[in-house]
Image (cartoon, rainbow, N blue to C red; front, side, top):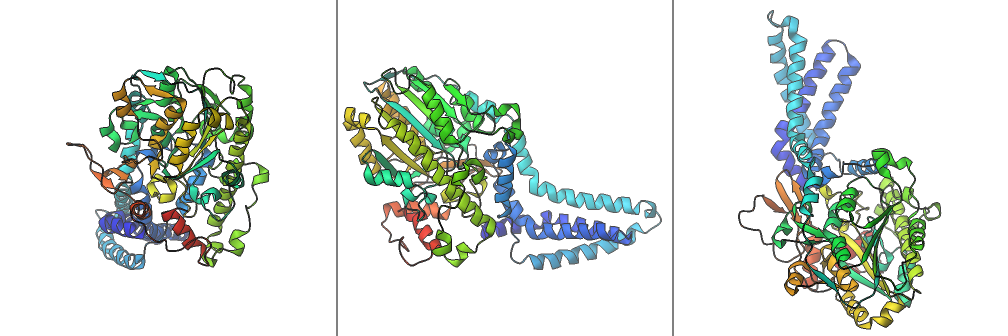
Length: 589
């Protein structure tokens, strides 16, 4: 990050630091009028700007349409949590003291000639007014340099929802069903990262139930190396739960692509589709609920549309209570009637982490940091350490909730398959949350687990063994393949064989060339993260400047999948926790 900040600083330092010059003019003017406190505050504001604006510029410069979209319909708790993650990225840049001396000198040598001119009789009566205007102009010029592109993106974002709805409003091709009579439950976790889940090798036991099931039962299949396609809920699920009309558009942000909904395809094939959502009805999640699930049987825990960004005063039920109650209310679920695909969208895992889980889960998972972790982790910023503890507690609660749903379906006579995934990951150790403007590898690495109940294994053994074999391949996969998995397990296919080739992807676990992920529109054009060894094909006459924004950890991870590289450290060694985590981050478990 520091290198990127310095690069930005070198390009626009002159213009953005006109703010400092303008504040110095105002400070001296206030000092001459004996307004000591106002002068000191103004001077301090200018100094803080000089020291911190490069990192602020880096953050603002990386904001894209997707980031701006997150401001629509937010709730106050989420906004405060995002601000808390931003604070950790705002740091002074090296060598700023030299810039301070230089710009203080510039302010001094330019102010006094100006002051001498303004003391002339022609200007003396309007001296302070002219000084104020000049200072304001310098400050405004600086603010324009820093914020203009983000303001332009904000204006453009105003009609993004309408554009997305239009792009997803496409005719569904002819579909048919095989003989499968399977109920599918899709558990969509919130902000769950494999790097904080014990079942994926995290040294803390944050998933006691799933880890036990892996050891004791054949029913649970754990997939590795699965990525979300975005770090924001709506953008990720819009792609995960739809099919492409034109694959050449995969280099565009998801809202600009022509797609059609998985839910509409399943309904056309005669399956019931149910959404049980604990996310509420507002925010950018609304894009998914109004586009993907517009024709589903929808149940929301609270009608957050009533209070907008004050919806936190409406207490959401706990995930496990809400899901089990709603599943129990559906009398047709689990019997021999038409197949049902049910989507459970949880909220636990969203920051502030402890606020969204029951009281009994809010204590630390264990004393791992006190006993085993290195001094740098154990004595790191208290707020970051508290966030890690809270997040790991939320992982344990998510494990509990999923296990409760599994307990409900495991003895059903109706063949039932549960698919557990997350909309995106979370970079809790860097305190960046899941902000795509500050992308790190952890934000996209998610769990993907499939559970077959005994009835499903006994009636469809070939299906079960096929997915067990796929879970063992550890091929890189993305949620862009999810719709094909759900359709395959549900026995839904396109009637025209050529349509299957056109719309369906390889299943998760099968070899695949992946479309770019985290495709974002920023002020300089489009950026993306690449999961292939080769760059994506760019259509001719493509109307955007496009930049590969793959971070170093992701690039090394992709390389490690094709070249067997010995990890730097292995779990269980005497090396520090940070090195163990880096090993897990890049090489998996």
